[in-house]
Length: 231
Image 1 (cartoon, rainbow, N blue to C red):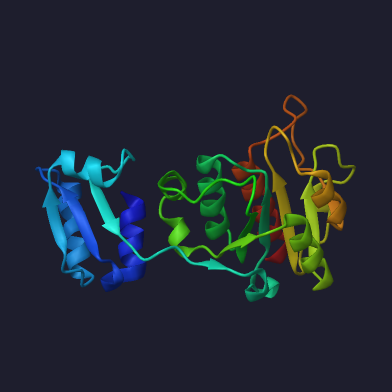
Image 2 (cartoon, rainbow, N blue to C red):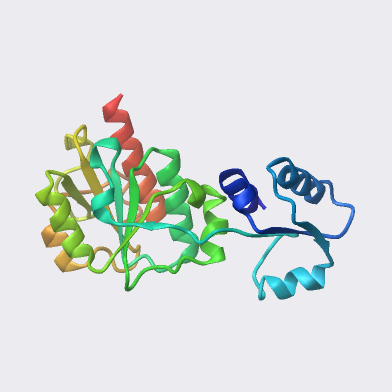
């Protein structure tokens, strides 16, 4: 439900239609009222079966919206001076991807960058996992993550790959300047080509009982450390 509310909040009257499930649920009526307050005229009540058909089997929690297509940006449109970047290599789980997006928005990342291949699709599952944060995120899809890392390096951006086997802890690096954190999937990590292209390797300090964290947790902890250093 929160992704629909955020889509309404961001796009307002650009939303074509909002569909709300028929019934006596106050939260459904609250979404319908919020949509009308934002200037959306096409707010329709439909039975559950109709919403199920329109969502094509996806989870909808009783509300759906027809929103403008999600905008993807080019890497050269992102200003690394405005905040750190998060680059995802091989993160294919939509839930994890959505959680990364939410953490990136909450902690002031300038963009989330991901490749055209071996990356989670931008699906309703991703949007739900972001709990609406995707509407506020700058998303960049690139043909090659390795080339994206090299391009950022050429622009003076410090590129840090998270590696559990690195000799240096992330807090030991100076992250006060333009920087990008590269995060891999929990099972495979960051690919060799991308890792070699990075200017720094660092690990997240953690207890030895575990040797890895999922991408969303690793990204959030890294962004928090960057935020801490810049205060």
